[in-house]
Image 1 (cartoon, rainbow, N blue to C red):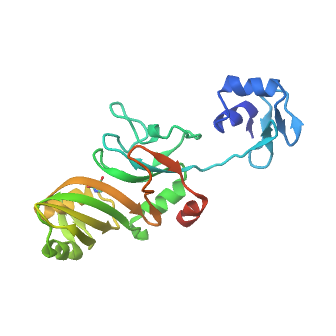
Image 2 (image 1 turned 45 degrees about the vertical axis):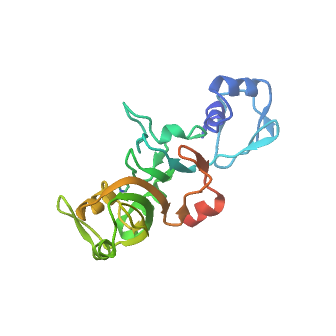
Image 3 (image 1 turned 180 degrees about the vertical axis):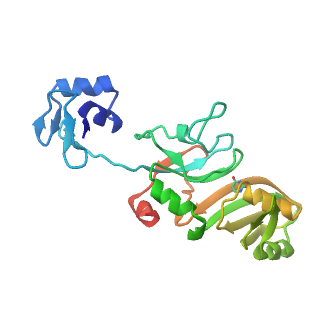
Length: 234
Ligand code: URA
């Protein structure tokens, strides 16, 4: 049970004082009965609340696909930098967080949600969820690099990157590649290229499991997941 005014403002229907006004003006009904007081309690799981006849749905979980821009940190709060959660202006719940981390200078797909169970499933190493990255590399990526990546690499600090799939899109002084990994170690892609004497100069995540970055989203843009995208994730 929760206060009606709190419920309505958490659902994004206005500030606490705005929704109090709606209630006092008789615009709000609970199970068809006009509500009288903002402090009235509602059971958000089974009662029907409407504003001017429009049903307000209580959705426990929110899911957003963000094309993370460079310069923003994968955190919920930060003293110095803007966070990915702060980019989600339409968020309704206060407990959103990014599923995994992308470095400050990495772009691309980031799922922002408050569904801890789904996040855990996507990140758990034993679930082997594919993460696909596009990268520009300083130096010529060769079939030898592909072979080394397919065998797994020592990436330093006593850590080992498991065998991965490297696909060369362009091999030149600056190369372009697509890399599929199932892990999410700190700076993993950069450290994998470092291990073969190369440097990542641009990195973007394209997909994570069934979730594929919507190509219409520019860096910094986001959209709620579609119902079928959520179903596949969950
Ligand atoms: N690997 C990296 O090095 N950085 C990222 O942001 C993601 C994967």
